[in-house]
Image (cartoon, rainbow, N blue to C red; front, side, top):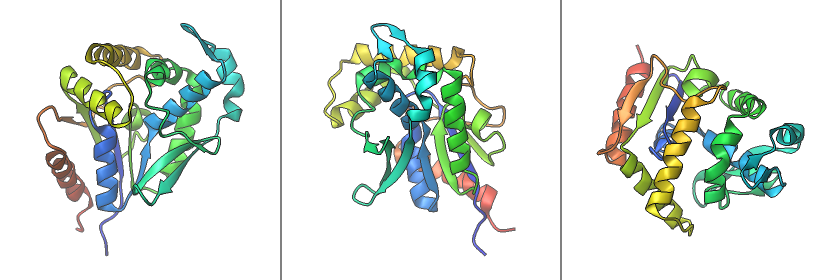
Length: 232
């Protein structure tokens, strides 16, 4: 009999490598992977494209009124061996990491109706277990009963450089100070929002990966998975 499948919930600050480790875990364990941050980014992209963000103002009521027109799906890309996000049937992977989306995603994510719609989708995707999901409220709101909860953190300057490297790889231009300020602002907004704020679940295990390689992080979490799924 194979090891039982569990739910792995990974939360933490921006640019801590949550998606990287969750994706690697899913590949190693043959689990499904869901990047919840991409979902909120897609909603933010919709708001930007449809005039719901003007200057320094988010039209929350307008966004809520149009939520039924926001359709989000994940499609597996055999070339990249990764799931990519679709917004209303359009692959928007190349657009959701741009700075304008970075600047607004925390505010869009703080809208209660947006979070409730995304959480409902996330819970549906994970109801069969065998899933690795990352975000900011996975272990506290989406899957409070997840068998394994990880809370990831890293030093701010290290997170900033990681985000810069990610953006550079996608051809997006930005400077260190701009990205650092954006990350700190997002941290503040994520932790202070009224709806499902970013916080460590009481039973989550902290993973500070400031000085850990991807392989070391993966080994750390795989050992925890083995402890929970090994046959009795």
